[in-house]
Length: 400
Ligand code: FAD
Ligand code: SF4
Image (cartoon, rainbow, N blue to C red; front, side):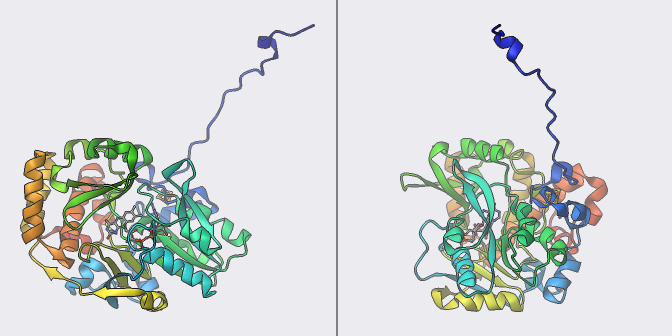
């Protein structure tokens, strides 16, 4: 007897998809820790549950940042700061490729067995795929930002399985805080931490909304960055660059785009890395390096001959622009594009430059995030905001 297709069909079972275990709930930045056996440390390690950056600074750098030193208040513990770029830029990197080159050199020199970094999903350039890279080619395949929340720490359980005992980890602040908390449990003999600053990250869906709201051609964007000239630069697949002034962004729409984790974050400059490589304290076209401790110095020395250097500027006064920006953002005001372009040109000409630009950006984001935590998690405000951030926010008049 031939059974009817209905009779052959496997009886439907109720599919139960196990919800991800995320103790930080909505504030989770998907750092990846909770996808591993280290989930058991999450309550202590998670940057959005237990703020203990001072204690971790003391462990990583030998001391906490000095709040009476204006430079450390903003940029964290450091022994050196440089504006530099590769003499020969690395094609396809986010900037000149200092991060990827350093990771390759550390592997080649035999300092480490692997590099924790993040490649892209083969089908979607913006979907992150964390990896323990064992070869220079695997590291190079991870170059360029994936501007979305990335579960970098999801590969931690593979470290002992692969026999890795010396690791270079690349990551943003929330990933590094969790890694620093559990680093003694991983069985590593050596750990180098190469950090990047990070702000305003998004989920993959949030990224699409940002691109759709802001770019003239969202489907062809291959790369973007919020630049020091007060514009977002979108690089398109045809090689063109589109510039959109910060002041013209649709703040009402975009308020909901940034991840709640990033709206609750006060570690913009990656205070726990050994060496930080970003751009925010350097003038346009240059990268910004912050050496935090002896290991950071070792990493910097490994690559310094491949770099050219320029001076670090520190010009202007950010306070008025930051105070005005706070009110505009809070009210969700969107300025017509032509006025935004004009404003951008003026601010770019007379506004803060170099380190003062970096302070402008830190002030604006810390105030926004302070208000976010105050309004959404008032019971956590006191414990969650680190002392240095409270001191920075206290310079401004806050809306209620
Ligand atoms: P590359 O050689 O291109 O290497 C990039 C490295 O970044 C790779 O090793 C990759 O593993 C890692 N990476 C990529 N995406 C992620 C991710 N989502 N999470 C963790 N690691 C990742 N700098 C600033 O000065 N101000 C900022 O506001 C700022 N925001 C950033 C936001 C994000 C989400 C990221 C990832 C970086 C941000 N940076 C910021 C750093 C900056 O954009 C460059 O990444 C940095 O200057 C290094 O450039 P590069 O050419 O040397 O990097
Ligand atoms: Fe876990 Fe990381 Fe999410 Fe915190 S941010 S809940 S540690 S995955």
